[in-house]
Image (cartoon, rainbow, N blue to C red; front, side, top):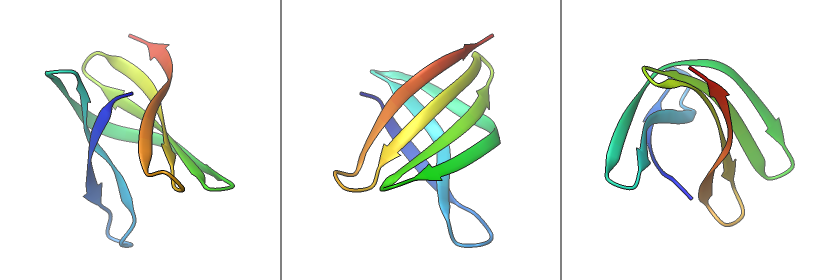
Length: 71
């Protein structure tokens, strides 16, 4: 599990702004894709370390690192 700080978009939606891997802070530079499922949301984010896919479970309100895309 990871911890994610969110930001609010102009449309009022939230999206990842910072990812915490333990005590390591990784800033999201851009959201390159997003998609939705039943009670779940996914974001492909770009960071200085590479791309990650994050999943948010709306029912239990938890974040998960779904994939490491690469550097």
